[in-house]
Image 1 (cartoon, rainbow, N blue to C red):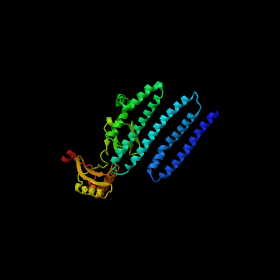
Image 2: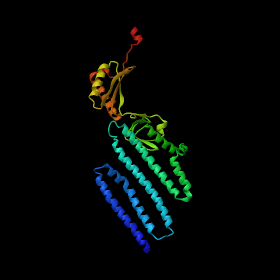
Image 3: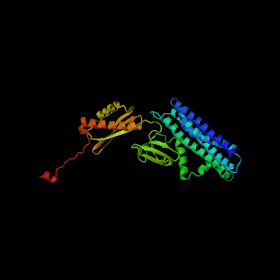
Image 4: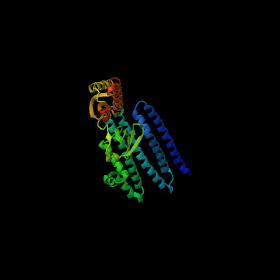
Length: 346
């Protein structure tokens, strides 16, 4: 027992000293985080893997200096497994740090943010693929430490790098969605924050994973769709190439409507509205059947939400103008009363 006290004490001292050093480093990084984003990211992602590394170092020092015993081989094996897990965790933390340091330069809170949305989308999927690959490699390496499972471990490691094995299982629902997610991201069919219309619902792409896509609808509901949906069914992407869009305002009016005056009022309405981007302002009569004529106004805005508000503003302005200045142009149903033939003869 006395021979074991010194190694155990050495391990405890290592843990205490290591945690004290890490605590000081964490305080320094937190203070530096107020001035630089790098310190904040490193402090956030590296703290727990560093704590685990200190604990494993203390365990190795203790076990190395303990007198030989029958259980040492088992303990060393457990530590090797823990080391593999810690290295995978550290590599994952390094990947997260690299991503978090690279992405802030691509801002998505500006109007022309297509490039930024593309980068954020690809980075999000690459991060998940990287974490999944690290997990597969770590599990394979752990299996390789067991003589009876070396064949299985080698198979797991080989499957991580052979696309043919993955393609062989692509018929399964999960893996087909994973492959679909990779196709969507790198073919740039959709990006984060894209405005899309799916299942007759309008919303923005809020999250893209390897297996599903979350669309935040206009009323704050979330529509969760498998990634394979976007490869197998048509959908509208209003911001794939640019955010600017064109919308319509349609009015059914009486045949007596003064079209030129209505066109002039439309031009005045959009020029006075800050939501209009100056690209498009057109009024045309697109139908003249039955009791009404249909006037369609085309207006443009910098993005879809702004366009929606602009269309509402224009519609309200035109309705108010027609009501106040040309009430005869309001939609009406005409009827002609024909007297009875017998009454006419009498």
